Length: 454
Image 1 (spheres, rainbow, N blue to C red):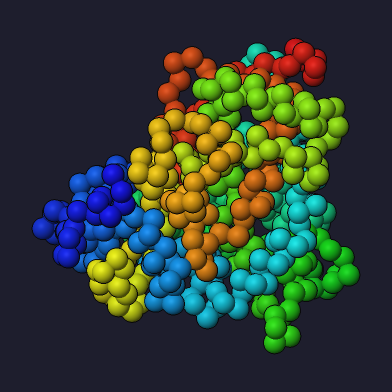
Image 2: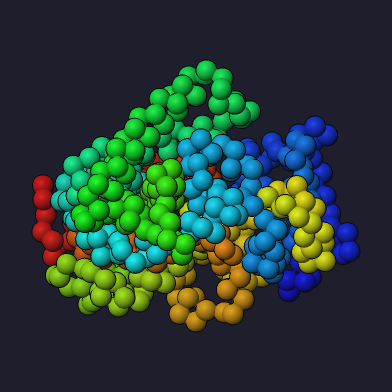
């Protein structure tokens, strides 16, 4: 079935049949992945509806997504569904920044991340992975998602704050605030920040502690400009095209935004990668053989990751099936035509990677884990596959994500063979990141080459 045939709307796009008061909000909140799937299945490529009094539009066509996010980018802002609950945490961080603020800050943040921390990040990932791996006991089960969170948290602290004495403590305060705010986002109905509920009071206290620590760290980074202590120092020294530095508030917001974007997303991606490999022994063996051939007994680095070709397609296929960023939300600020349909200003536009990247119109056997499909990618996948988003607000962390996952594959497959504990079902939980909804219990078997630690 071709893409046009799948759009069953004709000239007038359909509307979701929802509750007279709440619209489709309950269906979305209770099971968002099912909501997106049913929108595509029952209504086609575009459908309109409402969440309470907010008009919404769900797009399930790669062409329509590209029309809106790329060609119509000037008519979009970040969705109020994200901006409102994250404003207290992120301020004007890139994830929720307004158009002018986003245009000013993105080049500075992107250059800092891409140009200055790759080597330090590589060393951090390798060092943290080896330290955590050394603590794993042969034959013992572990919660892989929890372990990956610990690894990425340590790497992130070093990348953000370098060798500063406060690095681990400051990063932990940021992580705690992020976790409290993103957990609170799952509550419905949302309770305004000014109500003194237990959750709100916890968030306020955590944000105060985080802000005090970050303010002190930023002042220290500017006072010691010659000392490059991670991303914080780079942002403190960065200057825009007009020669102006980022303000303390802007630096604070970007450091928090990096923690939001990196920690849960990377930990989830790592967990899903190993989960899929444990379900596909042939692919797992191919990864092991490639790592042995390319890395051998050496410590993996940037050069080795570029040669891990099969690991690369394993990561791509993992992000197709389990994209950490599983939905894109946008607020339409001006009337915008998509696929011949007018999306009115004030509409919240919703798109889901979970649906499009599993769409049988574009991917054969879409539910199966087949890394080899990426050895001969199809042209239409350029739009149907967008795990990092699309358009000017797309995530610029793709390079860092692939680097991290390939380094972890190189280290852990050389040392271990992980096995999913029998009878343990893993169900995806679509919260801020698409993470496992329960413990991912893996039994650790050390390889003969690594020896056995009892």
